Amino acid sequence: MTHFVPNPIAFTIFGLDIRWYGLLISLGILLGGYIFYKNAEKVNLDPGKILDYIIAGVPAGIVGARVYYVIFNWNYYLNQDGTINFLKIINVRLGGLAIHGTLIFAFLAVILVARYHKYNPLDVLDAAVPGVVLAQSIGRWGNFFNSEAHGTPTDLPWGIYVDGQMVHPTFLYESLWCFALFIFLIIFIKKRQFKGQILLLYAGLYSIERFLVEGLRTDSLMLGSLRQAQVLSLTVVILSILFYVILKKRSSKTE
Image 1 (cartoon, helix red, strand yellow):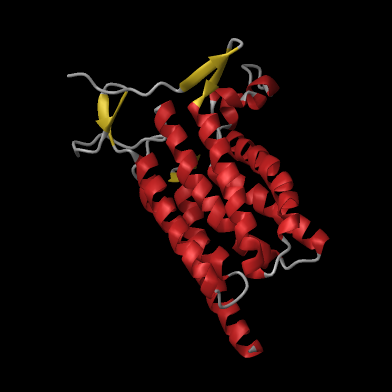
Image 2 (cartoon, helix red, strand yellow):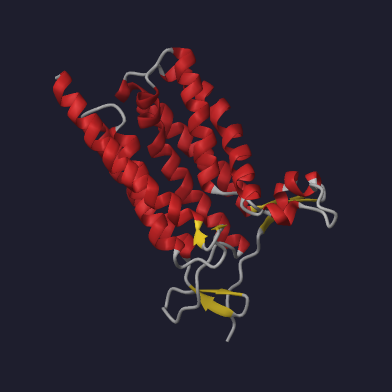
């Protein structure tokens, strides 16, 4: 029986392989940025300044994704004599990006720019996260073409073929969840009740999915004997609920 195995290379130009992963990440950034722009006026932001946040957030997110991954795979980036192999660290074409690092660094960059513009960072992040989760939904398909970030073996009809066996398409589970979350947030932002509500809904609902799906993955970054993504996701869920209650009560008192 012949199984479909995706080719990670989309095309080659001047001897340089252009990978589907990079193309899909780029598409996600473009569409996510457009959604951010369209949401600006809904939270009383100047759409003309949205590009500033994208210029700051995208590079910060890429650096953060790499830094986060390297930290949790530190031994891999050491030479045999214990010195740091900087060439390995900067060679992102071999893979090694973590979405949690992207979110942490990108959000910090956006907060700094918001402070510079004298905006409430919660307004800016509320406008941004629907685009962020759409970009995540699209970008996860890059994992499919790389045959990575998959789950444990399965006999379910929607399993994908990787390394000689059928496995859970965890990339697909996350992609579908993120797209559904994108639709939900786009609708809900029109009914926003307090600053930070969209951000907290995104953080909590995405983290619930990530906690569940991470349990199926075979390539998790580890924190001792624990899957770090599950530890972080559970922490974010708890904090999201806590701050949701606090900000909602504070908003009600103000009104």
